[in-house]
Length: 503
Image (cartoon, rainbow, N blue to C red; front, side, top):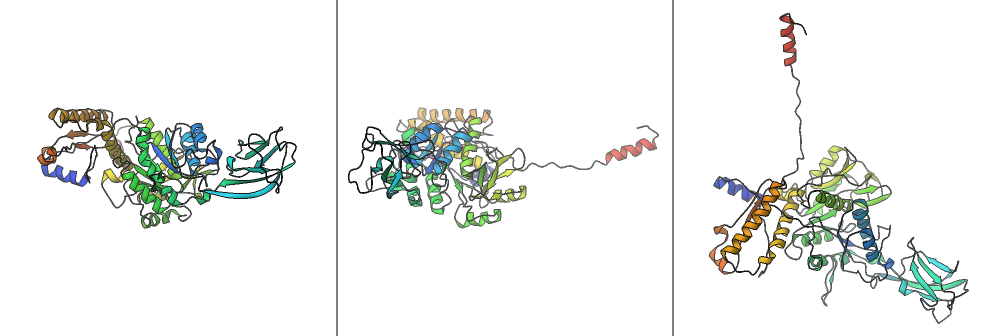
């Protein structure tokens, strides 16, 4: 397929090691620049019926920088079982203070809706409360069931949601409902249960409308920000959704790589010992996936662990100059416990948590200083031993390097292919990489323009390649102290006594 622009690829570490051994040279490596390295894109359902215009953010990416902004755009409800985006809102903004976050709501009030037949409601203090997910513009209000003429909104009554999430019909004293002791109401409500995994996966309609996970490709062109993480809490437990997330994360906008955070279904996997079989059977085995088990509790609130991992990673990157060189393992979660989705408590000892880790599953552990994320490996482990793929921090650094290179040097596309342009590319990238090495984000890094990787036929076709090597640090996940008994003290004691010394 023809290509026009900048892209970045990788070589396996084994091939680099082989080249090093063959030439006797050492491996030098590459680095990254400042960007929103951990930008989360979260997809799911939102209570849009609570907003002024429920249709505004349906299958559209919305960038939010705080909780109030997200709630105004998408609505907020504590019913996280039906509205997963609210779980992410609360966790990202309230617990971790992370920003910005991109949300994609797939609940469409024009499609996912149910009609509620009319019934009589008693009027109290000129108001009627309806504890349902009613669409405010769908109310048909009459004085009784046999009246053919409906009251007019904002003339005979007003409709709005109160702070408790209840729809309130308020009678206007000058209107036709004045002095009514009961009114007859029918309406349409949104039906979150009508949303299926196919809505989350989405696609492109015949009319060109983009929906679901396909909207991830629009994030960069819409906001100028590259997704760093993709999450679909409550949906990533579906293997088909997880597979599409993995595919989208490989090439966002066809060129940017990122990672997908997915969960193991705790309604099926209730014991840690069953997690690996579920993970393997359902194909959660990619280098760009982080697999999580079980759920996380904070007080009475239950979260998917992927949601907390989003926040932990975002907070961690913010503390490290927005460079994703550190593993999220052993970083504090805002959690009070681990549990299944139904609230059943999960207790993990260190050896049990480590068993999950060495199966490529990230979990939580309460061992030193509260609950923390526990696990360094991506989902590809243990089937791979390549450090750039198996360690979360290394995988994220390679993804970030590729995203950053593309963003930084897109301006060079279509410039004349002359020595000055090539030298400028190499010099600028080397300066950037060296600065990351100097700050400790990389152990080493370098960039070269190799003749054998740029044959004449490619140069004549307008193609050039830079070869970047980089060494992100791996996590120090096994630290051992060796303690032994020093018998020399007794030897000195015997010598002291036999020599008549004191002590």
